[in-house]
Image 1: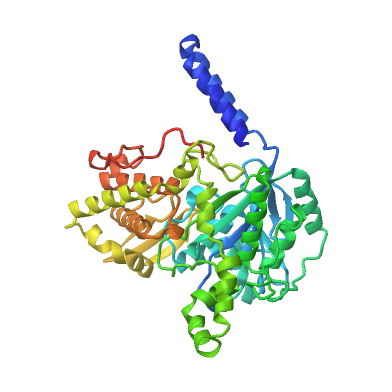
Image 2: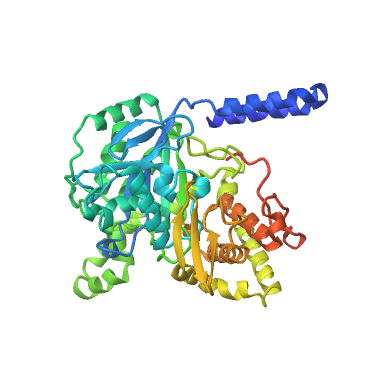
Amino acid sequence: MTTLVSNLCRFARGLVSSASEIRAATLPILFASLFVALAAPPASADVGVVLNESLDESMDRITGTGHTAVYFSRICADSPRKLRLCGPGESGSVMSTYINIGEDESVAWNIVPLNIYLYGVEDSRNRPIFGSFKIKHALEERYRQTYLSGYCAATDCQTSGKAEWREMVAATLIRGVYMFVVETPVEQDRQLIAEFNNSPNENHFNGATNNCADFVRRVVNTYFPHSVSRDYINDFGMTSPKAVARSFTHYAQRHPEINLRVMHFAQVPGTIKRSSEVRAGTEQLFRSKKLLIPMVVFANEALPVVAASYVLTGRFNPEKEFEKHPASDLAPQSASPSPRLRDVALPDGRTQIVGTSAEWKSYRQAFKSEIEENRDSAEVHDRSRFFKVLDEKGTASVDTDGAVWMQLSGNGESIRVGVSASNVLARDSNQQLSHKLLLARTSTFLKSPKHRRETMLEFHQDWANLQRATNGPATVSTQSAIPPKLAHVSPIPSGSTF
């Protein structure tokens, strides 16, 4: 697909260079032909390892292992328990296993649409830009009513927070997510569909020998035998999510023909505690104060062995792999959703997705200048606690299109603010609250370390939205230019391929 895009781009540039010889009336035909070619079904699709950051709850608080799942670009969910090939325009799916999915029958796995997994909605343009448990619960309930009506009639399934089907809805509200993706032929997808649809879906989850990482290892190894393996030394004989991602990445690097790409989906800013980087067994012993201090006191003779094992064989940084092989699923807001995750097929594609240190610094300086010039504004002073106030006073709802709103009442009146990418600047979203939300979101990402930042492509959209909100309602429905005082900060790059 990347080669096709490159060839088409070179072809188009050649035609444009001879524009004087082309009648103006033929240009629409040219570009229509180009888009038709780009929309043609790909000869190959993708399979990938999903690596979810660690949550501060249950055993994850101690182990720091996080969670893992499988991504498919050409396999979609016919139901949460049945697979099929995707149709035109569908974005793929994520399949995962848990100790307790929580549905009426005890099953081993569920599969959900990709955008449901990441954002809780079908269209990524409606993805939430503010995260709270109120919003996540609203998205979970919408998913339950739409997709689980035949599988989740029991009270525990509908109401229990321990029903882990909930983790497959809007995962980015509670944690950062990485995806390590390679290309596969369609025949392997058909074989996997037949295997899962014809096999019993029975739960035999076991934390030691049959956990989420073992599940992903078995699935991915059906595509690429021996591509995913345990790390017996660093994970003490078990399979961990980080070992799955590390071994699969190393395999892909040894086989460049399968085209490794890495996606990063940052946790959505809001009131939910930030997730933590995933760790292997020896890494957690070496880096966690909770475990390191007891080891020093009670097992200090083992500490050098643990440290050596981690340093020599266990190191793996998902963020660095993303920076080496970056790709993005973010399309322009005016574009139709693509059936595949997109990579940037330009020479400087890496920096367009990740951003350079100088570019992030320029944005921080511009934001600081903006704040100083408006230091008397209530929006500026309130932004540090705005998320908390919005969550405490607001009621979350999801409209029929999948866009999320927060409704607030006070002083005898009711107002609402759009908290999705598609409606934050809508005409019926309160302008002052929208501006505060965009200020707080922008500030959060500019202060965040790399592994908690969104991609530069996403941040360009956030920045453009902030400028529109700052400039007033007249610019909401137009693509306004960045004000002169911020002109040194790069706008959305022209010619980008998403």
